[in-house]
Length: 333
Image (tube, rainbow, N blue to C red):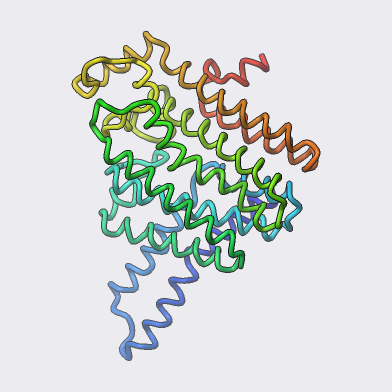
């Protein structure tokens, strides 16, 4: 795993600069007097912003892709390529999400849109996506390409569903769960599924990996939405609510009138009084339990050390929470 992650870091660092260098060479060859100073500055700025956007995070998706690749016997270089690819997709989607959400912080750092405006941020996201597509092309797998296009459609549709319901008090729990299955679980499921495609795994194995990743994705987003109220992961507290989203902690309150008529302090008090955060974590654990059942199905399919890697990734989701809310931490004490 450590070698794979090191390879991902190196790939992401190199990928952001190389196409820019080629673009500059092309522009210089076509313009007799060379590039204006301002043009060169913005080329380099795009490269730097793209690299910065991919340089942070816990590499959760890369770990999942690498563990899946090891489990089905793929070579290290393929595992690195898959890990890099899914991290690029995630980075591009986050840059675009920050534009849509008008977010000013991401992991305690200023977002691209807050530094350079929405137009440049969209270009940065598009550029990172182009890097991912280049990596996908090198993998030369038709099924993987088709499945990736489906995942992008699902992520986009999930985001559109959230925009459509913004600041509406009519959102239901079913709508919420459907949305996160599309915008989050689909990509995590793809992280596992992609390795199966590359290894030409049988349908049974592919289905188990796909189901494992999907349940893990649901648990991941539920924990993320709990963190929005108890200790945001590098984001402004209650950011989702400020942006007009009713996530599970608020939906569990059963507020009869419009929640957006209440102040954030009132919402926080109700969440505390009604135990909405522990209930949200319990819901996440339901999906984690389903994911662990998938691991049991893998016992005769993958090596023991790969099963342990999947288990560590599964429980690692909850390490972002305070110990009092971490079900696996409680089990160990």
